[in-house]
Image (cartoon, rainbow, N blue to C red; front, side, top):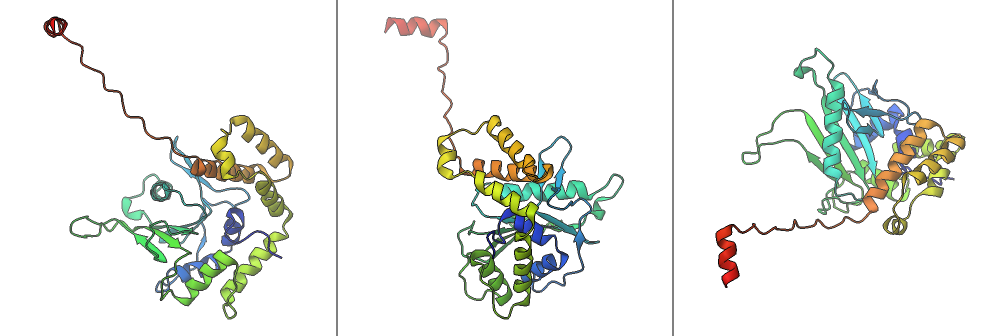
Length: 287
């Protein structure tokens, strides 16, 4: 029995570490593209150990899953909550891949083609499209920059006619756990997801995360402090979750807290009146 869905952060990342599952996913997203044999990036560690990349002294990124071949970097992320900062997150992930993908002494021409793909359980752009693909172009002429950097955002809730069968089956599985009768790929994904339910480490991590998951109402009413996260970290580690997995769970939780916390309205700067000079002050006093 499957308790934790494919779209659950940890389950998704672990499932996608399987090269065949990852390749099959890309074939659904890029039906006209020949998908080569891919391997986990050398920068990628198993999810249980956590994958981190960062610029020097910069914010770290924990990729869900990062694959590469001789020509491409491909990052795929599962996004369950609608966050207005999603485009900026895409931009940052793409830039980090470039920074880490070009070694000292290499030329810019050695940069690999990069794809940042977010599978969203919502329609970020509210246009009912199943896939939104972005690349840099000249805004007036529509001239492509040609930097081989792509950002792709999927909307699993699209109801548009004409969605390819394979992609529609994938969306149905992500949204409802529905398994198309004649779809061998979806069946293989489900088998991997089911097998992960029996992993003691994964089950412990998901159970602990579920137990301490913060409800939106709590996030609004209370300010979570460092002490809360320290106590949670200690509980996770002592629960045989592992340090790196604990860090990933805490990062995801902190991100969710930020997303749910209402934004304070920006305060308008108080305009200070210009001090009167002696002449104006005298004139004012005589009125």
